[in-house]
Length: 237
Image 1 (cartoon, rainbow, N blue to C red):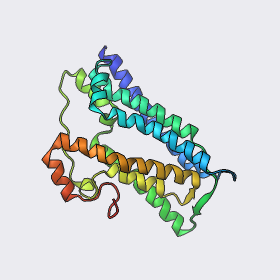
Image 2 (spheres, one colour):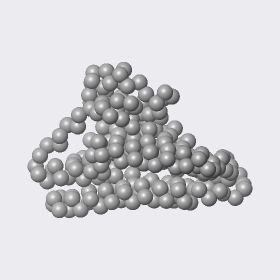
Image 3 (tube, rainbow, N blue to C red):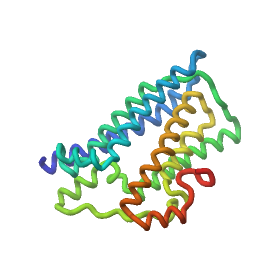
């Protein structure tokens, strides 16, 4: 594929990734903040869990090296990450759009408690941007791989991050996610369903993700796990 075409695909994929996050924020902050009318609870919760599981299944499948090896037979290797970004963004938008409102309000904070909730959410967003910058957003979105291929270079090996937030918790992006989805001062049942479902998936996925990291970094990651005890929630998990 011509370099210009690959670059266009990767940058549009990055834009789709950003748009999917924007759509999620709109749904979480606006749509899901409206209490749902009274009605059955079990059915919308089940639908929501299935929706998120469908999105999460794609993430887990793409993490398998066997599937990655088959993909690079179909698309240029530098577009493999971009393809993942495109599919992931589309599925995330679909899950957020079809998310079913769950009746009920868990709590609604006021005054200083509400301010504290907003500050927790703001901290989650700030930590996401910080951790993502350390990991390279363009690499996560699949743009950097295309740029490197266009220069005829080999991808640089990303070193193991162990300082800053990574010296406090092994997966800062997951920690910031927990702050963001659980920090709402107005926790509707719809928001809580999303917060619990998405966080449960991250907690489960860490096991397989860290197996891959041990395979990549070997003893260095094993030592890092001994030094930094907490996976995603300090003093808890």
